[in-house]
Length: 273
Image (cartoon, rainbow, N blue to C red; front, side, top):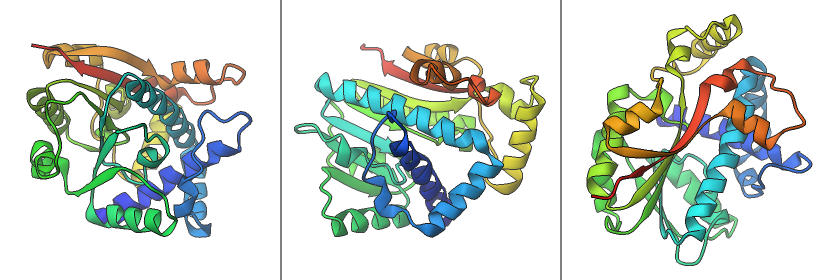
């Protein structure tokens, strides 16, 4: 699994890095290139060729999550937890005064990340937690790592939910809700219609079939995030399709991929007792 996750992390990093070349870019991530080389570029180009929407989906969500995180830091949030962090660079490039990061992923990915950052003399105020936040339990992992459950915390959960069983996604949400006094949480998710092949768009069905035959199957989607939030006693702050983000961030460009209408980002928060 770690090999697979690490491979995915390189591809996501390549797609993120490409935005730096835009004029103007949606965001700037000059750090990400320290992990990239000819081999990662080749794999990313192959995936972009087979799954062209993936690249734009990743760039749009990166911009959205960067903006939310930046606003949280400006509002005084000092704890950030990144679940399934991969080669995320935010701990180094969005390091406000006194902000502490915790990153959870498999040991191989985190060791590679830590050693490369060190070799490139990049400083990040981050604690790496090797582990599986579902199997090992998110709260148990945080408890071992000087995390303050009473402090306001921002959780970022990027590129994970489609690959987990629905019960596991709900379990993670419940764990955060029941143990962290004050929090906001952002994640991306796919519409249930995509998973069930009921969007009415043949190009989306073909895309998913091709993607799943080559990579990892998408197993979980959500139809209505507000309903899910309400059922879990959480409040929905944001919920945008990436098609809406595309319209907001790239107003001059037409929407190329129908899939963006069914791929979402959202931010939820705990309701104070």
